[in-house]
Length: 145
Length: 384
Image 1 (cartoon, each protein chain N blue to C red):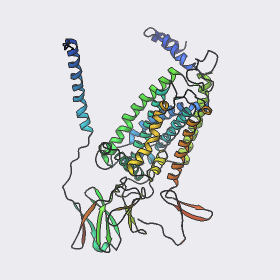
Image 2: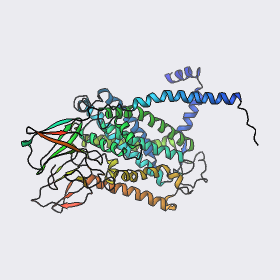
Image 3: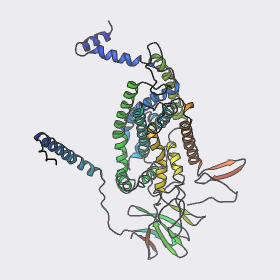
């Protein structure tokens, strides 16, 4: 049976200095890392923006508007207005409207979304996030949810 | 009496000048293997282009302002108002392209001549890190003019980072300085481009050169059978090899100036975060990755495009046969050629995709996969 060896003073001081140096280094590095991490203050929970007057849109006409700092694509369909985040879920390009296919199209890597925002062709992995629409006194309002 | 002996005497009273002179002399007249030829000059050319990037970069920094309101305008000022600004920016932009080309040729030469093998594995690994640093230089510098192409290439490039499992989203936010590409991204890329990367690359190049001088250039002899070059044999570094480098250097300067004059670097339109232009494409050295990403979902595409880089890094530890002669290691030669051809084919497909060509009087539209579709005269194209 091994008798427990006492820790020598030298060893104890080595460990103490090592831990102290590591703590000192961490105290130096931590504020630097925290400084580099962007401070992300979010704005109000719901934001609203006007996409223009109803009569400015003919059927299947689209427009990209800013809701806060987010681009949103607004489409006028025969059933009414629809709004989706205009940021492609693949690699972040701004989507547009393909008049031939009647689909939302990404110009970067040929991703296509149907009128419900679901990906139907190409590499986008997720649907486009939907935005709320309200028509108030002839004005099309887009609302983040 | 010329001034040099006086200066030497003054220095010699204070330092051991003779030892320094002996060291410099031994380095200048160091004999190189007989195989050393024009293909061996691309390392020095890469170094020269790096110096060109530093000098022109410092000059560009005098007028460049890294904010979203001023970056585009300051580059326009450099190109249109500053004396010889067009030349300085041209030297910087085309210099970057040629530097990547030279580094690639240098790596291909090292690969095909088996110079990465024992005992030079670490020199190769450092070389791959230099290549990675050079490409990152290109990526960070591309955003600085803050035009449409640069903005959207950066958006796509940083979005790919987000596909890395677990850490991806954090890395993306850290790189961008927020959710999207913005002024924060510009500031971060500027710091990376003008401070962190230059020092990192300087350190890597210095270590790479040090190892190369200490171990000497590889010959075509199997490892373990190499012998030191005897005096009077081999090719003297000076003047023989330096002369070769001088010839290639002059050709490079000629090519650089010709490119600047005949294919001036454009500025395009100012970045608009709400409009992605049609058919945006990255710089030529990212074209193969760009095309590859069209065939795979994001995460798989990322890993597929990382395979060549990881293979490059680990190659000296995978191919451990003692042979250096390419004729005696055909499978390595085959893999190298297939990788080069694949990069060229994917790059070419990326380049010609989403364009229109005319073939034997017929007009064709090439889709995102570069597949041709005949255009009927009455047919209208897509509109967004």
